[in-house]
Each structure stands twice: as structure tokens, then as C-alpha cells.
Image (cartoon, rainbow, N blue to C red; front, side, top):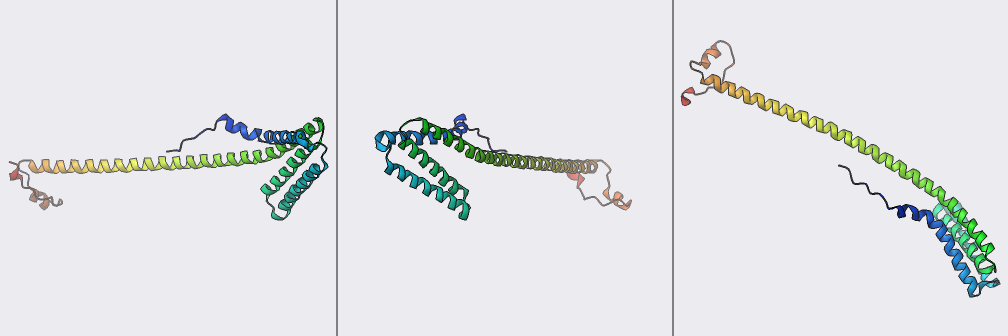
Length: 201
């Protein structure tokens, strides 16, 4: 009657929660690799990252303002933050400033993601509630229809039993000695079908 319910593995629940930390950690690691390969104190590389981060932020502002598309705006701002973190991680000579920015970027990413997770959880709960209500309505309708069908079957059975008993009574009465259907008709009773009793004797 109902479709089977499937429960997701615990990793499927945990992986989205770890995604912001994995993303910022990946950017930090790549920035430090870039730092070790010649980006440390490189003004040209730093300027490139500033331009790219500013362009991504501008794209996010345009998407949020004119288009009103939250997905593109969020992607633009996330790319701007990632590029800024990579630029600082690549340019700085120590690890303290990149780690500080990594912690800040991770906190901001979790703050933004929590909003979407809350909305998604609210939508999922509302969908499950609507699905449960529909299932209960359908189950009620099915129970009512089953009761109605059962009542119709019982009525049909009782009608068939009555017809069988009536036929048996008519046959038994016609088989009695001295039964005269014409006498019943003359007495004002309804006419019974003619039965040839001689065939049975």
C-alpha cells in the first residue's frame, strides 16, 4: 500500500556538514603549496588574486542586485572569499595570518550554510508532514471503500440466500401431494409459475 522508506547512511548526513571546512581547508593547503613554490611576497601574484577576488565579489553583487539570484550571488561571494584566502595564504611568510583567515572563513561559511540547512530542514519537514497527511487520507478512504465493498458483498450474499431459500420453498411446496396452484390463484393470491409435479413422481 505504501512505498518503502529508505534511511540514508550516517555518512550522507555528515558529509554536507563537513563541506565548508573541507572547502576552506583545501584553499588554505593550495595557498600554502603556492607559497612554497614562489608566491611568497610576490606582488604580481598578490595583485592577480586581488583582481580575481574583486571580480568575483562584483559578480556576486550584480547577481544579488539586478538578477536577484541567490545561488549565483552566493557562489560569487564564496569564490571571492576563497580567492582572498588563497592570496593571503600564498603571499604571507608565516602561518598565523593564513590560519586566522582560514578560521574566519570557515566560521562565515558555516554561518551561511546553517541558514540553508535550516531552510532545507524546514522544507523537508513540511514535505514529510504533507506526505503523512496524504497517506492518512488515502488510508481512511481505503478503509471506507473496503467497508462499503464488504457491505455490498453481504447484501448480495443475503439476496442470493433469500432467492435460494424461496426457490427451495416453491419446489418443496409444489412437490406436496394435493397442491393446486389454481386454488391459490382463485383465492386471490398471486399466480405461481406452473410446475409439472408429475415429472417428479
